[in-house]
Image (cartoon, rainbow, N blue to C red; front, side):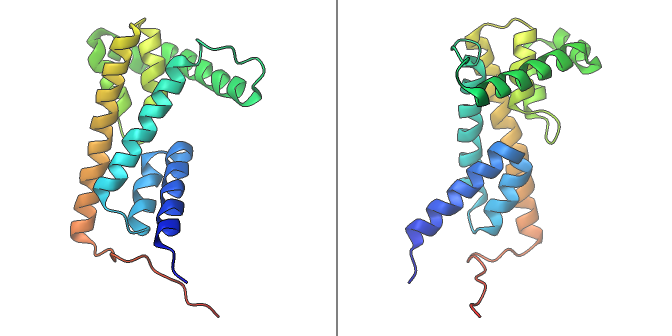
Length: 168
């Protein structure tokens, strides 16, 4: 018995989990293999990154002493912010101002939302400035992956139907 709604829901949840754990580099190939269009995957990735951005921006505004997993997230974020503040790239990106935050958020495989939020905090940007610049970086970074995926799909034939493994 085929349940396309359940299949699609599980596929979307899989893409979201891949995005939060491994990022765009995993979410795009997984979504393509599961039969989603590159544009659909891009929308899911942008929404996930936006949620992550708001979580990270609000991380220091809420009391998280009772939530162990939130303490771990905060600790990782603080480590990333310290590492970024000491890095040679930061010395190059801070003089560029808000473009540095956009660039580090958009860089495939090296930057991302974590780095963008950490750099915006290091630069003492206001909340609205951080939201705007990180959002621009999210959209630009996703566009890089989107056009790369569309290029790969143009060269390589990916089946439109998910591949089903026959039952034994």
